[in-house]
Structures are given as structure tokens and as C-alpha cells.
Length: 342
Image 1 (tube, rainbow, N blue to C red):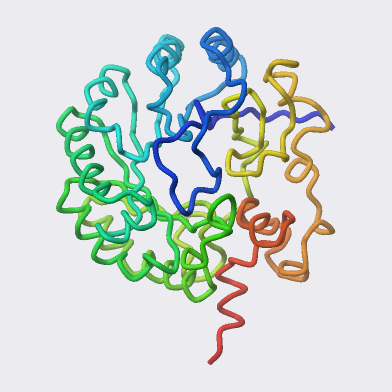
Image 2: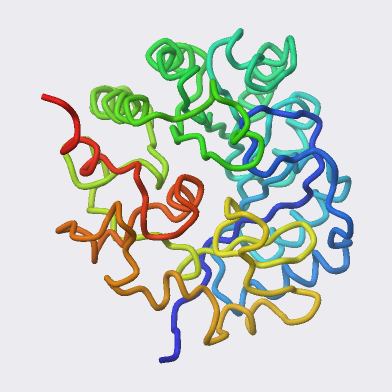
């Protein structure tokens, strides 16, 4: 069967270099990859996007602002009229606020993983919280839309209500709340674990605050890994499965292609130095976990569930991080609520 979809959203890890060593980093970022794409290769990749109907490119890292030529890459995408979003740890945000505005970044997502003491503890840098807040204020003053991103875990889940009020008062109007993946450094951090009770507490917080936030003009956005199929699922339409390899794709800084950038590095579909993105995307063997899914692929956590065929076992990253396989996500509201005592 010929696949006919396109990668409408591209997640692009500009570099794996990072100026922090956060305890929950799923990529274990720090040093750049051994042979990252040079500028000519990066611009060539940009030029491949229009034929693939790419509608959005999300710059990530590592820390994307550490790549010296990021503005030249952004300029090429702007010439191609492809919107760009960026995710940053915020450490370099203040000094780059005007450059982000000049580059036409549609939204800058800034990691904020709790109130001051908690954020600095998780990200292993004293004083970081205040630097990030100064960066957010500078970006907002420059006219750059800012979205806060919080990776929820046992250490910070109790701070979500206070953090919501803090962000509203700061002037941020978009907040993505997502689970912490047990990948990279997070595997070694017991205090950053995500037990089922914490996952449900996060879901209950989102559900109880969603309507009030919307009424106040504040967008509280649960990530794809938050769900599914109960009153805690806040999606307008039911979850229909992961988009990796169907409508989205990830590119690492050394030109490897994954369905999702959050996947471990061994789960690649091809190398852009060997084949172009079109060839990798439309290869009959690419992204089999999503393109050739059947109910028989469901793991023990999902097998027999009445929503199994449409849900397809939940978020692929959550499933793989927790169980070592796809289609087996244990972090499912439907499953956890059925098992909750009382």
C-alpha cells in the first residue's frame, strides 16, 4: 500500500549542544553530536520542505540558540513561508529576544519546571529561574509570543496551581503541560519519576482549570502524552493515535530521521546524508509502528481495551519509555481510573 500523507510538522534538533545538564532531559543533551549538519546541508534540508507540504518547523535541541547560524536557517524557512517555532531552556532568551523577533519566530516555548527552588533544582543551576523569567519578559516586550512548557513529575506536580497563577501574572498566555518521559537522564532520577498517582493528579489539575483558563484568555494545553478516553481527557475530539510518521517527523542535528524527536536514537528511519527526506518519508518500510498498526500489535497494558484500535496504545514515547515497546502505554486515564482503589 502506498502511503499518501505528508510531514506537516517537522521537529528539528538544531544541535544537541546544551548549556545546562537538566536532571529530566530525555536526550541527555550537553555536547553536540559528532558530525552535525553544516549550514549548506541545513539549508538544503529547508529546500526539501515545500515539496513535502511542511506547514511548521519546530527548532529544538539541546539548546537551539547555541547554534551560531540558527538565524540563517530561520531566514531560509521564512523565504519559503514556513512558520517556525522554537523550544529553549531560556538561559539565552534575554539576549536573543530581538533576534527572535527579527527572525519571525511564531512562538518561543520556554521550559519552566516549577517555582523557583524546584525549577533550579531540576535543572541543576542556581539562579536559573530568575534568568528565565527575565528572558520571558524580554521576549514578551519584544513582541515574541511565549508559551511555557512544564514537564510534570513527582517533584513539581503540587506546584501546578501556583505556577498557573504565576504565569498569568507574568503575561504568558499559553502553557503546555506534559509528563516527564523516563528516558535519558530522567531514568536515573527517582525524584523525577511519574507514578500513576502523579499522572492522574496532573490530569485532574488540567481538567479542573481548563474552562476557567479559556474564559480568561489563557490557553492550557495538555501534550499528546496526556490521556485518554475518560472525563479527564480534555481534547475536543478523541485521541486517534500518534502522528509520528503520519503527519509529523523528527530530524536530529546529524541528519537522522525519526518519527518523533523524543524517540531514542536507535529508532531511526534513515539518514539525510544518504537519502533525501522525500525518499525516507515515502519508503514502504518507514515508520511501521504507525503505518502498519493492527490490533495484534497492542501490548499487555492495552490488549482487550474497547478503545484499543482507535487509540493504538497511546503515546508512542510514553509507551516506549515505560515498557520498552510501542502500543503499550501504561499512562492512560482510562486504564488507571479503572484500577484506582475505591
